[in-house]
Amino acid sequence: MFDNLSERLSNAVQSLRGQGRLTETNISDTLREVRMALLEADVALPVVREFIEHVRTRAIGVEVMSSLSPGQAFIKIVHDELVHVMGDSNDALDLTAQPPAVILMAGLQGAGKTTTTAKLARLLKQREKKSVMLVSVDVYRPAAIDQLETLAREVEVGFFPSKTSQDPVKIARAAIEQARKQFIDVVIVDTAGRLHIDNEMMAEIQRVHEAVSPVETLFVVDSMTGQDAANTAAAFNEALALTGVILTKTDGDARGGAALSIRQITGKPIKFMGVGEKIDALDAFHPDRVASRMLGMGDVLSLVEEVQQKVDHKQAAKLAKKLQKGKGFDLTDFRDQMQQMSAMGGISSMMEKLPGMTNLPKGVQAQVGDKEVGRTIAIINSMTPKERSHPAIIKGSRKKRIAAGSGTQVQDVNRMLKQFMQMQKMMKKMGKGGMAKMMRNMKGKLPPGMPF
Image (cartoon, rainbow, N blue to C red; front, side, top):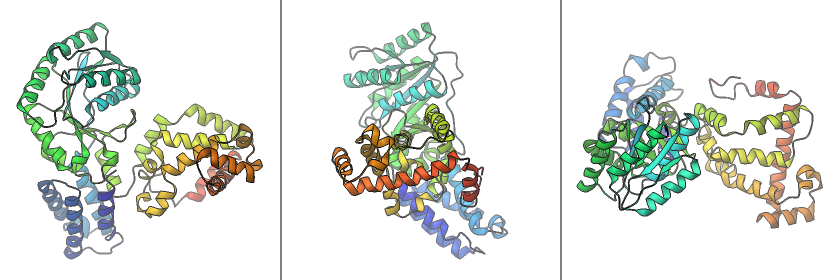
């Protein structure tokens, strides 16, 4: 996410880290690099100008010049300004209305609006413990109604059926009435999208908006369209009272221009961001965490939250009990750990949340990438239960069979077994109460603020 911008910004500000003294000259040189990084990321020019001016004003003032570590003080200023540009703090949904609270989803075709509607429903159900009903008022695309119905079943929330022959306003009103009878907490209305903004589209969505009086009107926009995303959101906001924005496809957005432009141009907060194709890949947008990732400082808080939400705690407790009893860590356990990583978005997603990991050489990152995890799982799945329990019996002919069964080479099997043995040794230490000792040995190697 935002890889190109992160790399450019990190390189620009790192040159000042450790500087004993900052001058107007080296501040100007660094700001020139930051400016180029932002422009290349497709951040809107007025946003770039204001950002650079704010950083310059603070950097040449007493705040940095009197600091014991001016380089770090400068980095903090850049971080704080990035946070400010993106909205200072997470702006949560306001669902304090009398049920059912209505959320209206707007956006252009192709932005991922219907999928995002289902993702939001799942998030509200899982994390907020809300009962949710989905309804589509897109009477132009029968596939849109069918798609939303399928997704509603997948995330196990209610769905109000509609037809292309019906009026969008009547559909929305009937859905809300039905939700009221069923004591549903939230109704999410998925509106029609277009390839471009037109008067007919705006008139229709304004009618729906007036009819349902939503507590939240969210604009769904593709982050990869850069500052165009901000301009489209601004145009929608003129016709519709938006309360927030959802950025989609941020996992494929190497630039980050939309994230840095939208708040400034529209005045509306980014409330969520889509971070993948999976139905659970929707995260609350925290400007401070995104800014930290942009500067290569990681995002430990989000990583901790993901562990709490996505790790199978029963399975983890079962493994811990097994290790405490002195029973060995086998290949089935190793595979389970790999699958848990995949459930959390894969190693690449975890790595970009760890401080300093984005500075690793590309070759090193590739060696511990998600393809490697997938290959490991495939290799272990190609083994017999006996081989998984007793890896020592895996010799020449068995390795050839496993490689053939998993579509890999014998050297891949050898490499995986070597990794497993290293993991097995580490788990053995943990089983003997060596966890505290391991953490003591790691002290000083972990980022500031980690609780060890």
